[in-house]
View 1 (cartoon, protein in one colour):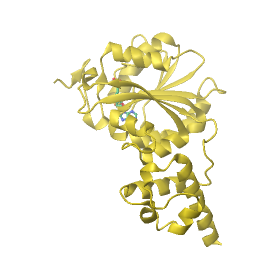
View 2 (cartoon, rainbow, N blue to C red):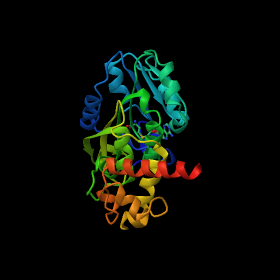
View 3 (cartoon, protein in one colour):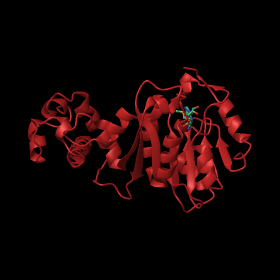
View 4 (cartoon, rainbow, N blue to C red):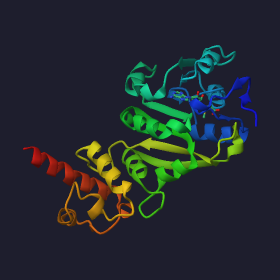
Length: 275
Ligand code: SAM
């Protein structure tokens, strides 16, 4: 399979798998439903598979592209160059809060989308979760396995740290499955599109999000163990039972609400210990 598409040789280190299936592209653009009077931001526009049809619908689109050659191509795009604001940068270092203040529509949140480079998709989503307050919604193409994990609930084999943290920040809506043949070159895995809508206010009260993250990591790093074992450095069996949670259960059956209860108990215990 040729690694060259539209005169560009795909760079593996930038996770370049270019979409070329018009049916899939049409479905994604329909799901995004881009309109004027929205602050649209695309991550990793590449050769414009999503950029071009989105530009048919709107007058302005901001794109963030790390590959210098592709950023140059986009700046000089014969039809859409004038509509595009091209930011040649690593999206991982992008301050989306500052970007939202620089957008033409100052009172509106960002609508972010992209066919993400799979090698950085999970850390990039966590980076975006940190800016969730200035984001209206996100549409991302990801590995299907990652979408399954984002959307999974307690009891599912896909349920884990990513599910709990993503659902703390966002409403997760799987949109579309995409086979490898929709890309050039085709990736080795199946893909899927997901819509993430940041909650207006968190679904559970958490004193410290970093404690929630730490507790989830501890509990799921040893997912076959009971939480009385995996969380023993944070809470005793008795302290877990006092929260109304069975210490002999495993992490995979705990809800987001349970994790929030545990994290808040750990925060309270730690602040007592500091005094
Ligand atoms: N949107 C195009 C498409 O659907 O065909 C390209 C998708 S390709 C999977 C990922 C794109 O993200 C590439 O254009 C790549 O150069 C770009 N990219 C990779 N790492 C990036 C980063 N850290 N920040 C911004 N863009 C990045």
